Length: 297
Image (cartoon, rainbow, N blue to C red; front, side):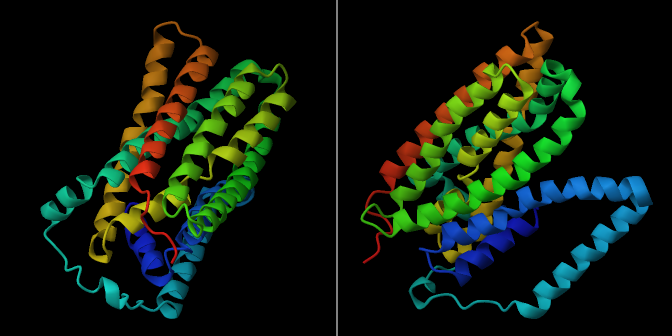
């Protein structure tokens, strides 16, 4: 993904209009949730045919998808209004991208949002095993549904909603505010997961959390694409991908808290809402910085 995402998102930005980008970016990123659901199917194949056969099958499917991409995709023409953006040196491009205020705030919000996502991704399973040990088998299947369906629906709805609102008088700010609202709504949903007294209630709230929390990615990428020129989109997307590394700090920090005697439930009920809330603040500031930008005439 570190190699494909910058090129893929750049291709999408060059192919679709600014008022479609949140939708198409969300559609592309929703593959993560679909892949998570399909992973459960691959586990069944491993059990029947072994991991070697499974890897070969997945590899062949990936090669077929790549071949189809090469055959059917054309290099889109850059719009005439954007042809004056000549490529710059790598260092100059990085500095120019990072010194744009909307991009800087967007990156800070995204880093914190990654922290929340990775914190849940790493520690939710241990929390459920610890809290509801008798439902270990049910958790694996139910979580696949929660991630696959909840994440997919949330991603698509978030992208479409952001595009629709961006077409109004709100302009590009609407995308940032959709992302901020997503983070804010995720806080009570996650606290409900931790506070649930039964496995069924906890998984229901986790599904709700995914439905509201995963609307953020497509609109965020769309904002980034609108803030930089075509010649800088690959670099900007690469910088955005680096934020994944920052997000990985959160699970480590939570693990460090556990080693100090903090309970897992307490750690998750404190850190995840804090990450979501701080991310929402930076996304809101991004929205204010984007006021008047990208309004449909």
